[in-house]
Length: 109
Length: 115
Image: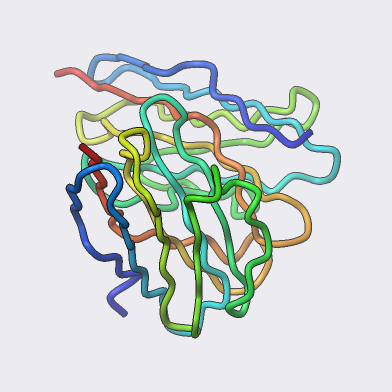
């Protein structure tokens, strides 16, 4: 079964602390994975995708096929990073995304 | 481009009433998706279209929900009759064709409250 698991509903850190938002997936083929972010009362936005191997707003995510994980990391959290983060898996065939339950990141001053 | 446009932004209505949510995808996008977001269940895909044709409606909760896409620039999600448990934020998203390089672009959502 295709599934995305984000085990933490809430992650609370202080400004300047490192952040790791966990994401594990279940998929039989070669996965295509994304992180989306939703700031307070705003639309979901694509943050990054694994195939691009990019760093956006200081965030990076590495696909680990052995551990079936795609954790989102940032070395030094900022208050403006506070948001809801969703990990998503592209389902094979059509362009269908399977989202995890989301993790709320709260960065305190 | 103004992005994906949804209307209304907010809807408050009494249970039993018909609710119609509207979405205008980004011009040229041939995929359109309807999602529902709740605190309890997170973000759920309800249905999606490709070239105006419904491809997968397995996420539609029950017969009270229906979605149409009469043309490439417009889609509706209808709930009739509405119930309090339908209260949620409903998002529409669109994308170009298949693949990792074509992310989904989301609208601002419609916040629906059924009293």
